[in-house]
Length: 458
Image (cartoon, rainbow, N blue to C red; front, top):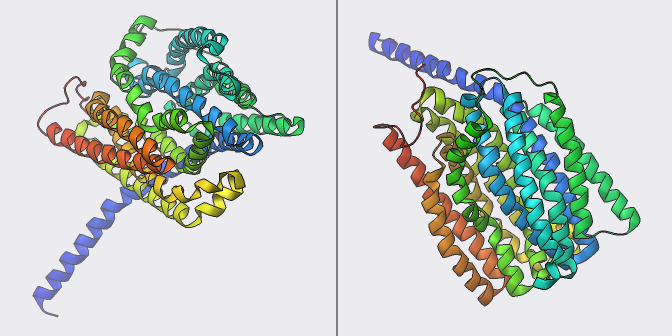
């Protein structure tokens, strides 16, 4: 062996050792976060699984029309829930570290007061509309589902808020306990409805409300002994002001977020009727397991990435966001492949023969999941950087084009038009949002994001 060769081998061994040394912290980080990720998936899986079973039991017993009415009101619920999330849940996830550091019990008290004001206002308005629904020609299954919406909304929003504080404490195990109670209560309700032979949208929503109240009580027991306030504790008005400043951009895009994913149910319902809407939502039901994975992943990583941004600055968020995006993209691509191969037996097994005429649309509409993985990673980035307004022009433009385009596609091609429009516009939105996140990182190399607080020096 020549001296040159020996030197080259020593250099190669040194490079390999440095690469292994750099890999060890990454493996340790993965080992620390893997159990939390599994618990978050279990938590979301229990909740979404219970809701899925409830919807399937209604679809199989009531048929496409009852299921269509249920899903239209569920879309309306999601609109209210997005408003609630924009001004209460998402700001709490990010602002807790600066408003109430280490005192989440006191923060929860303030947020619960705001939640009570929000839900009382909703019940008064929605209840009044329900009582006069016949004047607006809302009858039958749709009126039945509207009554369920009034009952279920305050209860489920409280449950979601309670779960979010478990993640704020970095305690997904506590969230799993609450979701287990929720799942058990829903399953008991399904069994009772089956034994009675009576299942309607109102019944399904009522069981959901009861389960949400039980699960909320389980989760909130952790905070039953609340510490006294400190002199530096912000008042309710200050908390609301910070929530409003953070959430107003998210609030302004609530309609846009909702329209991106749920307007298709309203359009198909008005043009094609409740039966076709039920068929369309049976296809969406097959996508729900992976959508819930995206939601749970976002819930786990957002507090951590927000903390990284607060302590280390904008550029430190690049690696975790890219890592999350790649992981979610691979997961959704694999699930799309599974649906493309096995969609017919899955649809028949879950929803029954009444829904088989819609099976050919599954491989097309399920492409929406892959785009959602990109959008989920970008939303985590925008919120963690305390810059939710960055996605507003993108969503506004996409929705402005999407609604008339989807209306035309459904009018001209029926449900096939809906199955084409949904993944096409979500893909365009995902690509545009990813480009915007990249632009923010590049700007951050030269200056701090406008309107965002300066990162702490560590």
